[in-house]
Length: 278
Image 1 (cartoon, rainbow, N blue to C red):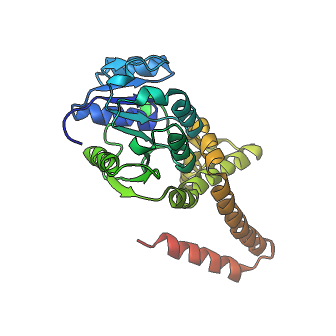
Image 2: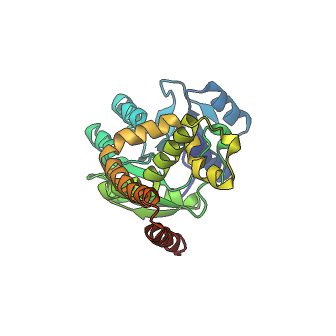
Image 3: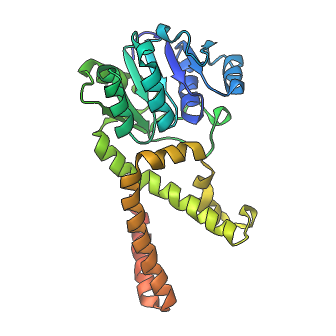
C-alpha cells in the first residue's frame, strides 16, 4: 500500500481492532465504527482511531479503503444496505472466515469490481477491542478471494494492503477456501465447543481441567456471535467435516468398548505420527 489513504474500519473486535492498531502504527488515518461505544471511545483515547463514524457511517465517503470486520451475516447486511455509500472507495474488503456468501452479496450490490473477500489466518480465542494488538497479522497468511468481477488493480491493492501489515497474502478461490477452512479451522472450533459442553453436562468445571483439557477447550471461548455466523455461512462444508469426525470418533469408541488394545494403539499411533509431521 502506497501513500497514506484514509481507511474506514467497521467493527473494532479482535480482527478489526488489530487492523486499526496496525494501520495507525503505520501512520494511516483510521476512521471507525463499532456498535460498542466503549470500544470506539477506547480506540480514540488510545490514539488509534482519528474519528468515529456513527451508525449511519457518516464520513465513510472520505475513506479510500473500507474494511468490514463484522460477522458474516452482519457484513452481508451492511453491504446490501450501505453499498451506495462506498462509491468513493477504491478497495473494499471483509475479513470473515467464510467467503462465498459475502462475495455474492458484494456482486449483487454492484461493488464486486472493487471488492476482495479476505480471511487473515490469525486470531485468538479472546474477542473484542481489549484483545486486539498491532502485531496480530505479522507473518501470518491471509487468503484473498476475488469476486468474478474484481479488477486486477483492486486485487493488487489488497495484496499491498496486507503486506503493509506484515501478512503473507495468498490468492484463493472462494469455494475452495471455504471447503478448506471447514477442515482446518471450523471443525476444530466446533469440536472444542462440543467438548466444553460435554464436560459441563458431566457437572465438571473448567477449573478442574489439566493442561491438556484446557488446551482442548480453549477455542470454546471464542465469540459465539462470530461462530454462529460461520456455521450458517459454511454449513455444507462443515457438515461434511463433522460427519468424517463422527466416523473417526465412533471407531475409537468401538475400540474402547471392545477393549481392543491393538486397534486403539494403531489409531493413536497414526494420530501421533500425523501430529509430529512438519
